[in-house]
Image (cartoon, rainbow, N blue to C red; front, side, top):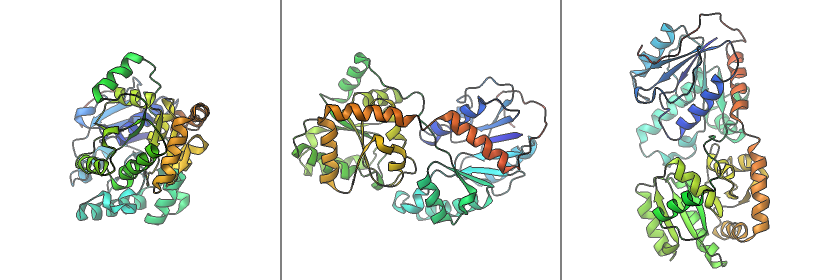
Length: 384
């Protein structure tokens, strides 16, 4: 079978990480399949593979453009593709082959305030419905997201396969004291701290975390709150709130950090806090566990499903309850050790190798289990 992957967003720090890890895991599987990688010109070599059955094509159309509706079908026809998998929710409206689409979540429908543009929301809704209707199979990241897709897109549940993603192998515990100290000095961290990372959106609940941190301090907690991630205009609002709560001296905003710094910040944290109110999966919970840090997370959305019994869960809309949970884990060494061990156990439920095998099974189902006999594709970068 000749399978194409639409990887034009592989340079994106969020969806791109998923694309890279999943596709590399699929390419490692022993199959007779041949693979065509549709990649952007500035990220054509991100996927690591020396396999003879892998070929790259530079797709020049951007996401959400009219041009992609012309270019992608042309590429699929030229290379006689049997199946297209879009690991992002978008599919070309016309295709010469069956398609599988990954819909990670329906955030802009469930949380419309995340997308300020009314036109953008209308386009998102239309394309989401179209992709759900046109795809032969839909892959999603969690049982929670499957239920949300059924709820908002009115899809037959039998059409949806839940395939858990996993943690990028690059996330691991950093015990190098020199590396940690360099990060501490850069960001002004001076002792034990609670850590959180995430972009600024209302559903991420940064404000709720600040209020919970104030409660943590009132319980007698002695530490800092370190918040990483590009917050844009949200940082000013959060700094103002921290001032109003009189906790600004204990709160550090790092802004964007690279993966090396992120691993160090996870690893050295006393607790990782995830107060989000809506997540289709919740990768940061698993990243923290992979770095050996205990997790306190919200009871909302997919987080209980992903965290299992390895995290202490609390109502993130209740500053007292969430602050108390933070204090409990922060101050109880025995509980921390137990939770760190549970975190390692929990990570075993998530494997890119297993995800790859499940995807391949889904591909076979999507084309009726038939395998096409075609000549091998040589791996190289090219324009079509």
